[in-house]
Amino acid sequence: MHKYVIFFIFGLAAAGALPQSPIIRKLSSGLRYDYAQDDTGRLHLVDLWTSVKDLMEAARYNPDTQNIYHLFTRNNPTTSQPIVLGNLQTLWSSNYNAAHRTVVLLHGWGFTGLSPSNAVLVPAFLAKEDANVILVDWSAGSGTWNFNQAVINTIMSGQAVARFVNWLDSVNPVQTRYHIAGFSLGGQQAGIIGRNLARPPAHITSLDPAGPGFIDNEHKFKPTDGLYTEAIHTNIHGSGYARPLAQVDFYPNGGNNMPGCTNNACDHDRAYFYFAESMQTGGFTGRRCETYEAALIGNCNLPETLQLGGLEPKTGNTGIYYLKTSSSPPFSLD
Image (cartoon, rainbow, N blue to C red):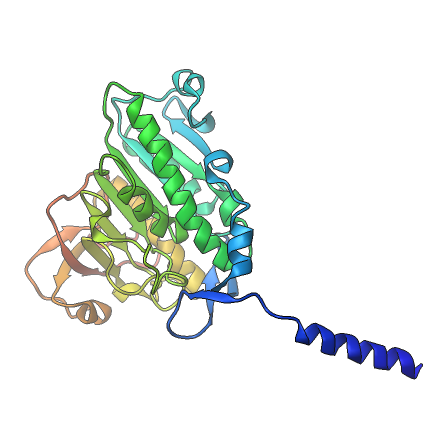
């Protein structure tokens, strides 16, 4: 009996002596571990230090072949038509119309094209306009529970989606207007797409862009990623990025603790609900703030106002804006 106990202890000691995968990058200058929310609203404790093993696992993801592009239009609002990079037949046989606005939608971590954010945004866009709504299913990259790998895959996917959009642009005689919108990790990916396009997109909307993994990440969203860039921050003390990222940054209710919400998941999701409603009603009037700190407490008294979200880019506008919302739909108070 004793020899088995000794063998077991020896085995543990030997396992503990094995070298760990070397750390090559720290995505956070603060704590190594933080909580991040997947697209179903569940929180996970994640490691923000990237190891060699993370890179090796991410190398298995090939976004050029594994990303799936689903087209929705008013002629097919509920059943998608797949468009394959480099395959003109899939494009010409679809309802894609280059004369219409093209919207590119990106889901967040741990989900597919059937994410809750897309279920809200696809019908919202089509109710407003007969657009080409292309839903990017990058679940082959986002579906891992290794968050470091998901962050790496966010960057790889963004670069691949840009190649897809560049191809789409090159084969159409009419140059369409592009609006890129992403939620959470997709909100960070939207900027990566924009900066890698041959022709800067007219409009990028980042919906509570992910904070974990991007605080000190050189690939995070930038104001210059599109001709007009906007971020809507609703969970800055949880899964969202706290500081301003875009040309225009909105902080509804100070960026956290949304009325009607009792947890971070609800706060995080409010960004795409507010955005969807803004396209229908034109509501959500924000007042400009002198500083980011003023936006957090709602101490914003500058005369300038601006509407959150909406379908059309507000090119030329900049700044930080605060507004209040109600606890249930309609969320806009104006």
